[in-house]
Image (cartoon, rainbow, N blue to C red):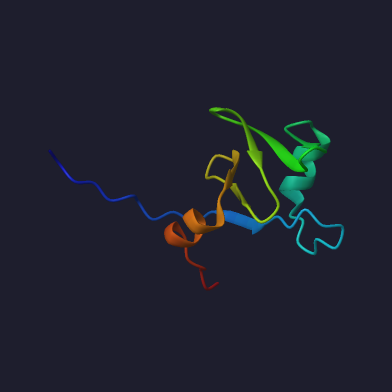
Length: 89
């Protein structure tokens, strides 16, 4: 068996609070909401994201990631923090 390391890539992401005072709404998430790729559900409150693997649910506190091909997907905070680190520009 071989071992593999994930190639380092830079992604864009933000933590979705689900609150009206959300201060960070990247243009790409606004565009996805407008084109229907992202929608919201009320009970329990969450975000539905059409991903390459089907529709996935994001809950408040989850990170929303835009991948290298513009695809969107949710990520739980503990997985995000274990996988990604900030990039200094």
